Image: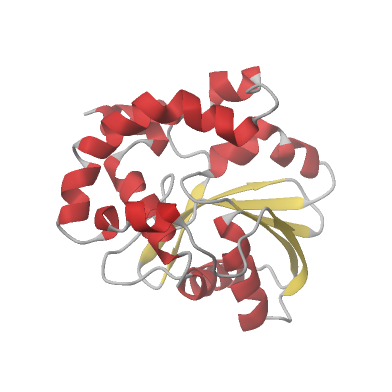
Length: 216
């Protein structure tokens, strides 16, 4: 019920593009050279909106921000393993359907892996890369082990619909403090970021799957 309420309170801000049977939510603003934004794990388009980046960049660029598969209002079919390469293929198809022949690709966190995979798959379409806080080389990661059960079929659904949303709400203040520290959490972010969208069971399961995929 809270997930449905969150989706009503935070309706799609863009339009939908269907690629290979998967529906992607995409927001476009501005005119000029194309700038594509790929958010990190557990996030959504509103991360870029709340930061003010989309509005500022749209003054000089055609900004194209995607909800990556399973986040925000984009679908994530269960029949596929959504590796960076798989997601890059989907974004590539969406850019083709949007008529984007060349673009600067900005990837944040997990989105950097998708951005790099896109550049490897379609170098002619990627004018340049901007990589923020990326993870590029395998290293011991406790979060990958912790989230592995939640990424499994069946068990993952059970966890995502019971323990995970409650735990997420309890830990949310600490998560924000860790993300922004040592600076304080910006008032605009605390006020406008759609927390309940992030804590929906479907998005929690997608985030767990991406955490489990990081080292592989």
